[in-house]
Image 1 (cartoon, one colour):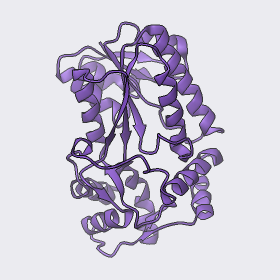
Image 2 (cartoon, one colour; image 1 turned 120 degrees about the vertical axis):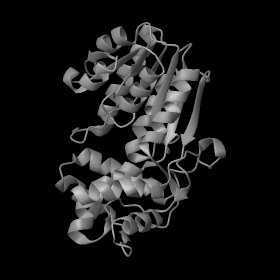
Image 3 (cartoon, helix red, strand yellow; image 1 turned 60 degrees about the vertical axis):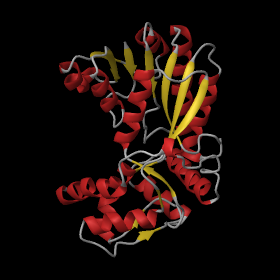
Image 4 (spheres, helix red, strand yellow; image 1 turned 135 degrees about the vertical axis):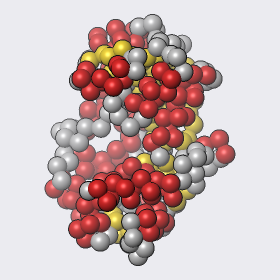
Length: 295
């Protein structure tokens, strides 16, 4: 039996579906059981609860062949780092109490450092789980999500620019489709081919700068001259707060931008064939164009 946290999200839902398609028993976790109806219809067991609840998690993890762990987004957390810490501690304690032997964890590029802003909490989660005796844990250090660009559709339509993140446009980085992350996770969950504590990068088809990605997306939506505009840190922070993000989370994203621009984020990363995944930015651009047309 596999337990999937974040089962209604971008990676968790696909992992659950793929495990079910392989004939595996799956328990899917969500705050709201009704949101799991489609997975239950495919054979999953629903578990309604929060990832801050150690007792719930311990009960749900007990007897699992492996678990898939993540920290869900929380855009309104008053103290985002504390939110990450609370979830990390609960997940770690439940894994320990339940005697979980294998875990695959959604982490991020930059998780080698505690100076990586919004990613720093994943560094903490990695360190906590490394301390669980007899746990075999694989951290998936994913690149920048292609799906992050969906949040810029309004900016593109309203101002004719792509931007918002305070990241220099010429810096190359791994940019990955969330489906590729889910597929890597599924492969390792089925194979259980990892021991001790280790990590792999999930890096997309090739490294890209945000300017290069913007050129591809712009061409797909009929705006071949669409520019990437790097917002100054304070302007980016103000924009995030204006759209409803907590000040704490906005600060974490600004620090993430600084860590990227200063080379901290990618200091531990180097592309290898094993880290390369199939979906390229051109394929995603077609999905993006569809969403852009419908918005």
